Length: 298
Image (cartoon, rainbow, N blue to C red; front, side, top):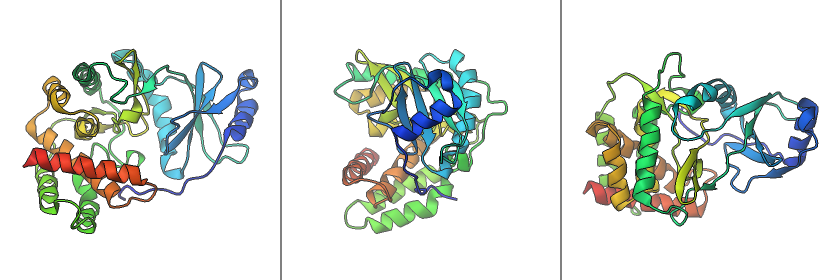
């Protein structure tokens, strides 16, 4: 199964308040409020000043709850930056059908270019985090599958979807160049032992404090396998000297970078082609990413 937008359910702070009161009465008096950037696949709410509640918004994301609960406490002590710390596992209730999590709140702002003081340093810090993650023991780690939309697995999973997007975008992008990037990525197969990967290293999952990278969040697509998908940030946020610094700081071969471009252009293509749930702004940004990849490739 390829990545699609699952049907999401609607819920609000009142539901979260009832869930917490019923299952964690020790926190029942704490205020609940939406987080400004609450996510799409999972929706996050403040619980008091020191915690957050995170709930899957569709069935496709439910398996991520148990995975984060099991693995984040094991990985955290070995990583150079804070990651989410689960402090409670909720059950279905109050009309909400799936398990959910309570985490300690991590202070910081979503990474944007205007909040980052030194972009090359940010890139090197992120590379250091990913290098540490990739070095951890993968024994019993979750291999690529539907739980993480096959991140860490073969790009060929998305071959039909990518080619269809290129066709759908005919006349608005350089389709021949996009196809060349994609086919180069497909040809560069991963043959090394599996490593840990975050799966969604995007600006929205990176936090900044005082201009520096301060935490990495949202490990729902965590898995073990090929780390190429974690390189997309090189084209979705980084540029120029920072992109070069990121690449230099990561000990990865040319084939992995080719697959990284493949993961990046796949997602940009399907969003630009009108992936359900994507906004006009997201589609425009994806076209810009495609243009950047094509210019770099040429």
